[in-house]
Image 1 (spheres, helix red, strand yellow):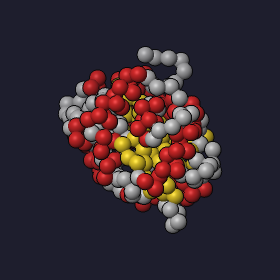
Image 2 (cartoon, helix red, strand yellow; image 1 turned 120 degrees about the horizontal axis):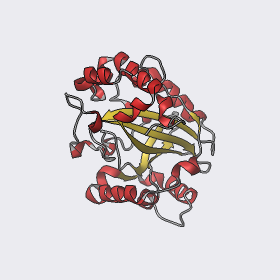
Image 3 (cartoon, helix red, strand yellow; image 1 turned 60 degrees about the vertical axis):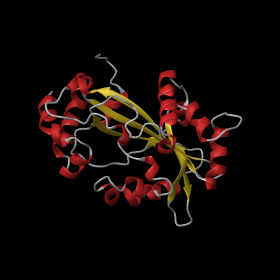
Image 4 (cartoon, one colour; image 1 turned 90 degrees about the horizontal axis):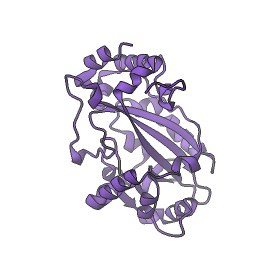
Length: 261
């Protein structure tokens, strides 16, 4: 539906060539984690029941950071399971290492965007991002520096986007969701936005990394001409390796034709 006030996601598609950008801005962690729709919590519960080893993680060394996260969430007790059923967003708890890296040691990732969280537990943030072509080369050092300098209780927010042939929140590879296929059906194509928050916990020094998913049907972007033009330019200028990684290649020509505003 067209509105006079552009939606928040319209700003994700500026009129410039595709590039990875860390692009953080001040955030509100309390607002980010507040509000849990019952339908989303039900989907989280389903994922945790069906495949807990794929979605729920608690390394023993993360116990202090988990307990601090539980207190920050306003819960009297519990662990990552209780947080997973209390919060709508996914979350990762990253522990600092002496060398300056942050390792994924705990969390609940019920709605991964075509990646396997269970293969990343215990690894640094670089290893989590390793499959994304050119990302570490362009942003790896910047991300490390940012995380090291992150001050306690000062949250920062950023966004990431992709395209999907399914509106399902849980897109773990084991579920084999519908890929983007030619010919493109705009009503069966979604812009999958990850609203992300980074908060350093004051006691443990761990970083709480939240991920809230927003699905936008592709047809909605046609109501925002500037965003539509920006998305088209990003897809047109996206390197082939990244288009392959994002699953866009089979419908790239279709998208470029559809997004002519």
